[in-house]
Image 1 (cartoon, one colour):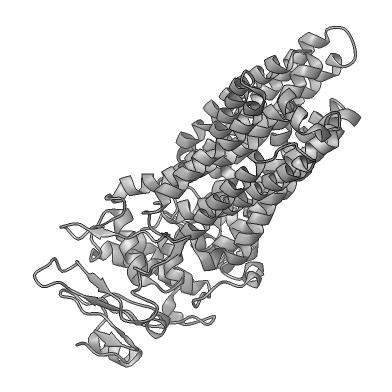
Image 2 (cartoon, helix red, strand yellow; image 1 turned 45 degrees about the vertical axis):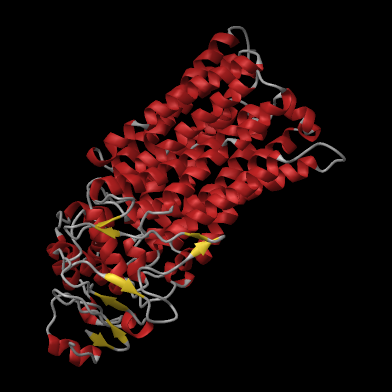
Length: 612
């Protein structure tokens, strides 16, 4: 088959591809005589190489996963396909978020340790400087998210994850190499922590998107909640490593916990070497052969399977309906409305991240040991031990979202978590009044601790994973990478803000701090109730139709989600055409795309090609 400068030859049914893909690439795939019809042996025919098997590397290491084709024609990555391959993608995502949680929690146990203060005396007795050393990490994460905002669509999901892991390792090396000789060690440590944050910001902006684009609708929420829940488990690991290292030699006390981050980064790097790129990202780049191969591998079906082909067609229609005509999405596209509602959807995702931080989560996670030290008058070791117990509660309740997110739904979990967090902060507020104003303070302080235990349980089960899941699925493919990056910037901006002001709030308004967070949680409830539609059980393309329905029929998007029935691939295709979401419409600069099973004369007429 030949058309517009590209050539595909193989035995078996022809796959007709045209449009910008045909104009931008020269490809050849030659079938091997006597082989299975779906087996394609690639060979390079142009300077850009064979599409789907390009040689890309970082530091000389290949970072493009290659599929192998088994006897039944099913593509495989890491020698597997279907559900097992989806779990391998989840393994990369969860390991990355383990690293995220670990890096968030590791400083809480070492920042006030004697060995750390000895090596970095600037932090001793200066709570502002101490807070800066901790929170500079969030600044780095913010910069990493901005990097993905600008370069995420160009890099793709897997390459961005590679870069994030490498940057984190570089930051860790700079931190542990800080030696208090001749001054400047604290500045070096701060720079290293900021660089580590940049790597984490890159990955937290990318991993949820990669996970959602490689998952099926029925378990996408569960898989991303497993990923998000591992933030709690990572924090738990950090707490207990910090506690164990307290009994080691002085340099070991803080250097080993910092260095241990590299273990997670190396696992992410290694697993990612043979995993596929996101099929939806590949389709935005008109790399249809690769995308079809990846879709088939994730489904555990041959490339020639009609369901796989139709699934690719539905995604292509969704891309074109959003006005995507190849290349990188401009940032201005995020701020558009119409049927696709790009701006509204970005705000929903970013709003979730903002509310997560303003709910008071990091005020509890970072300063829980301080409550025990200041109110119940425990030692540093005992306070850290109790903080570790709190993290066990945090981790256990984080796992409940894995099972509830698809059964209960995103919207209900958001609302349940908001009410639970508000009541927990009220309990803490009520208990701390007598704790700080008269006799019985120790018992009241224990009551406040119970309130914080309850808070962290509700947070772990609901608000911990949901703000990472929602932006990854609520935003359309055209703007998903950039909108998700913008959402992540909100997490880190408000993270930095809350971590910096919490010590000041505790000093100035004392128990009123927790009333402040209770009031904020109360404000979140109506926002969630009236503006956040349910997305559980929906394909990413169905979610596009929720917003099209709300816009076209002029109804609340929450009601549109409630009224839209569950759709199969054909139902999505039919309704997309009804709302004008079809590549046949050729609107908004759309380019007509590949359609499987078209006639030879259509190919000759529209693509200028001919069968050979």
